[in-house]
Length: 354
Image (cartoon, rainbow, N blue to C red):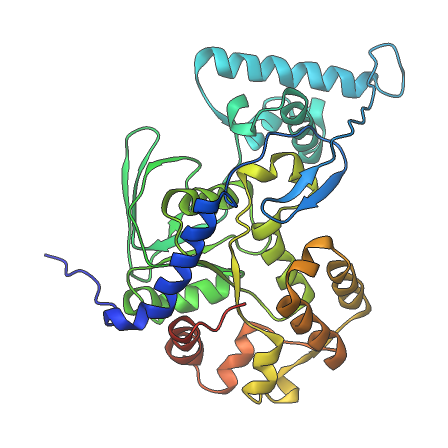
């Protein structure tokens, strides 16, 4: 008989428990309520919910009798007919499936993706209501057991093996916290170091870089179901920060569905730019910021939600001043397992998040 994973003693989670209590108080006050669904128009920002659509509606006309738009009009009708058949037969298809049914007609996957997003926005329904799914690329591990839509029971394990992020889940178990890991390589290293077992009960998720829709939906559902603390572990660089912002506040391309995808309660656990100085990471382990990095960082600093996060702003200004960035792997300078055995446990135990 397999033994249950042994986590740290109960007092280890005191800071996490206090953080969760504050989150529950926030939810009780109404900060976690979902706003009314919006239409697809230019985005604005609301602190409690992330990116939202502007109330003023703008439209784009696509005509069947115009040479400029007749092809787009025909493709929209084609995909609408396919969606109708999926709904009528109560079956589901991925965007990839739809593309390959008429690959010569659609020419490329991007055309299908764009039209499906337009249809979802036009009808003001989530993509799943169209019976169109995304192929999952994310992974999940830890103390999580769920039932898929077809009744299949899945048990995620605290081991070196991860489970693909499901497209839909019906039931889940609880955990002390959820850790979102930016990169697959870091996620796999934490599994190899038995991080989940030693920090049990916990859940780890990775979207392998920019997260796909299923990974974002799963993170949102875990938050809505359990209201457990959610933390991000990303590189101390502008693109790691951007990925964290997508989980927390959403992306412009999916802002019409932000209320279904974002978790504003997410906290930044690491790698913080201040950690680089505090831990004396050597300069030869750092990477100079490129011009593109600096432009991305300036863009993030101008976003409205940064005014709500003075500690985030301070960290990003520190990044800009140093003109260097660091990957999570820079911590291996201290020891090969420093991330899993020292850095993350100390952050979680003593509340080292912002």
